Length: 238
Image (cartoon, rainbow, N blue to C red; front, side, top):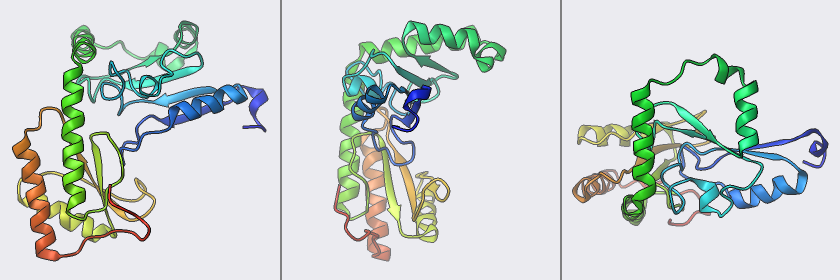
């Protein structure tokens, strides 16, 4: 950053990392951007509608929502349940994007029904914090249940819960076992993750407790059947 601070630097990060559910320390990254005069770009696809008092994502979650020099890239295909995407930033930045972005200028506009449904969904998200609270509680419950069985997960509060396995074979076997029992959990392997492999479990506010229990019960059956739980050295539960 010291080397490039004079040239209008950019710091680019995910808000919530898609495969592991880990949250980037956006407040500290923003402090770094301020220190070196950089612009912060956040891919907030997996935190929009999930984190923050009003569901505005990681900047709101970390208390820097609305700060100058932050550009949020957000999708409408996840929590919003629609199609397309949008950006959030200060008015000057938005104006520059509209004037100079070739991608923006050359893209076909979204169909009006899609825009209307997205606006309605955003309104529901902002006006109904109970939905986010329900989701957070279900994510916490499922993460704790999976961890209590001895599987290696990562600490977190998001509804993305990784189950880390020591090999592609073991991850694929577990995924196949779950599929045979009516549960789809995809396997993520290299280059999606640097080492090992993981199953990416996601929970939504609409999942019922009996569905969560179904997954936990089948993970317990897997453990009892094969008795092999991978936990890397130096890791701990949670």
